[in-house]
Length: 245
Length: 224
Figure 1 (cartoon, each protein chain N blue to C red):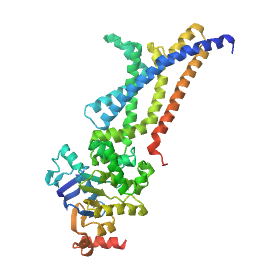
Figure 2: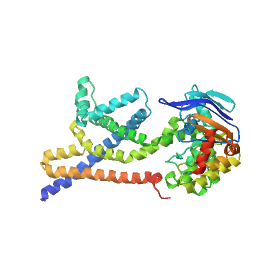
Figure 3: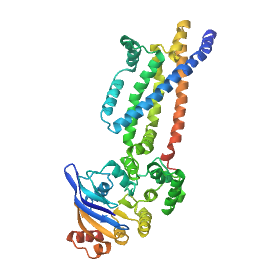
């Protein structure tokens, strides 16, 4: 479905990604774990072209794209089939919850407003926010904002949703509501690539774990195998540290 | 206050006021509208780093903020005829006020654009919108909300500055009162009266600003 090969990215003289390969199959929920500064977020941003990678290849929908030579048109086409959930939600501040969800449909996909609102209402219902549809982001809690962001992602009927630490900006008591929505999506077969620090999610919801450190993939394994019988020493150490925390 | 002075004031009030409505107000509204178009255009060109255009905008702002408004009026009205360009007083005033005000407002709008979180543009991209679509529907409306109080402030300041147009023979409020003063020689009373009329106009504009801010505040309020 989505495959990234040999992605490289530097900021100034600092090499943040040193050749990363990741494969996500249809219906996969892949969790990317790793310490801060390992390049997880940069990877996700490169995959959705929010950052320009210096090298690498993207296989999407059976087509290969050179990340350096990809055109604006190709980027726009790929983005219309993907969705992105940000750490700090990035809801459109001047739009209501429902408008946030319909904006991409009406403006980018030229869908009639009535049809878009219908989809928008269903997406908000799915994340349990039907009663908040006319609220502005400033009137919603962090957890509610992130659920609207997930509804916005769902509405465009994406082939994959990228999540960039979706619960990191939330109070502990609010992460649960976001995680349960994500779990529900996973159960429905949504393909997801999730950068996260939530070990519970990685262990119980994701199908595969990619462990990154220092711009490289250290270990990649099915979730259960990753947590129960990690191969690399570094992974074992990481798991030991988080379990003691 | 003696009877004669009172009669002069009562007699002149509508005469000055009508100049406010036929000159000061149209000059303010037309010039400020043009200034806003110019300001948004110049702010966007700078925000998007459009080559050449950006430098032209910086140059325009440098010139119009760096020289006196009065001098700009003189140059256009008294100077340009030397080059064979003759512009009537009112259009000359509109031209100078819109170019001058556009330069100041462009900076207000540019600062407001830069204050919109970068994530708003990224979120637009991620739902499939183009740069222009996201600017038009998400970033610019937010920036205009931020800029609104400062822009309204500039509008009020400009309304008062239109009194400078009297120096290029536009018969606005100040000019109208000066003409009456020349006849009756009561500068104190008539300048006070002109001031009162300016105050009336700016009070209305301030009220409109308050109303506008309240209407725009929907998405920044914390109540449901």
